[in-house]
Image (tube, rainbow, N blue to C red):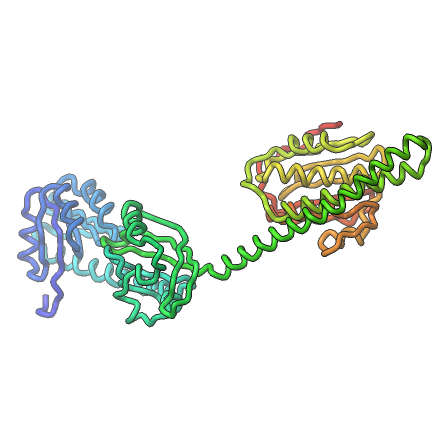
Length: 459
């Protein structure tokens, strides 16, 4: 080797110690450290950086496998001498190769070590450049801190978030960017007990502007260095707060209005009952009672939309047939007939799904006429509810998504608006199919499994 060759650190696991001595004599630029036992070699790897590991002896292959588990990023050579020849099983990452040469030619083994170490370094360099590019150009802020919470590295997005150039950010402590009422010491100690931690924190940049941030932290990406990915969610938190405030105001407004409307309607209901006693056969009183019932229904639907429109609880597996039967029992169905054509297990909020089905089934029964046949079934990516009535007018189909529901279908229109809101809250697509021979309400994009077709149930 030339005088300019770099000294390589080689760990030699050799029960006899002879291979380590031969390698040291064959190439003076190999700094060889010998260990006779696998456990001692593994301890050495935990405490020291090496360029290559050479394993010798009758159990070299098995010992080399144990070493690879601990040192996946360095070349590992398993050396066996037999019948005057040396066989070398060479491994670096997923790649394996083999070389052979006569016993005693340890200079050739030294050359193989140098070749594999150079290859490993080249590949590490490519990988590190790739990681560096991803680190620098990541949309989220990424920082690395030491055991004391002092920043060692930061990407461009982090510099933007902290409002500091990299040279000023590096060396600052995490606590310098937290409000005074945040107990950073307690947070940092808790992180020391967990390999990973996620959460939210208030954050103050170098300009004094406050932010809300989410973070995901990983401890000891290398010993003593801890990586955090930070995302500014200030705008999202502000929007969420505005939506909560608007929802609360809407609920309060709707409750007040419904109370103010319900009170005089209840007076009207009492007057109607009194009039019915005096005029039991008056058909106009029947019509008035029907209209009054519709007014109460509108109030209840308005409250339901205001309180629950975009909210669902945690989803869980729900059997479609079971929840359809529950909904059917809660609807005044008269002579209508229900057929569950097929069923499936849906992932949904069971209470809101039942509310959706009750509104749809009621819509079918009320608007398709006496004796309507209602069919419910599972589809490839969801489920459907259909009837054999006159169908749904175009104005109603369009009004379901509009700001004011259509009433041209003979009802308030809020029932289908509630259906659409529940579907949206689940992330489903809701469509009213334009077809002859009745209405068909389709839900797609449903997280479903265990489709069981060709099942029939009639009520």
